[in-house]
Image (cartoon, rainbow, N blue to C red; front, side, top):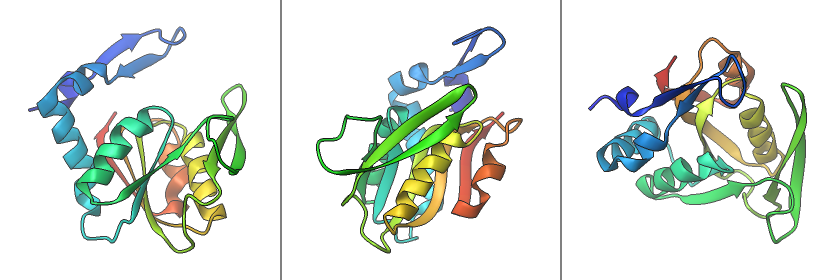
Length: 171
């Protein structure tokens, strides 16, 4: 099965000039979803991953499945005011403006080995902010795995200091 055939291009969404990579056909296909999870998880088997971290919202989809595949726990990073306990927050730059993410203060133990997960790596801003939150809590990032990487954008370069970066599909 070609996973790429289950990813739909949506031109001019969310704004003119952007070709959005829509993963919903992949998510609806049981074999495609299972293959994507395996291909994202496999490079990190046997590396002592204790927890998988995913950011709201598509990081949750792949993160929980990868956590199960690696016999690890799952830790969510959410948008502001969505977590019910004490949080650490980080503000980060977007193309136009800023955004904020939060994690529970007790989500990661010092030295805990975590794998960072998301569906897409573009500019690297969101993933870099997530990695910074994990470092603030004393976690050790084993690597980063994404389904899709937009290689024409600087995301990989921005994240090099956070460990191995694995992408299943690179455009």
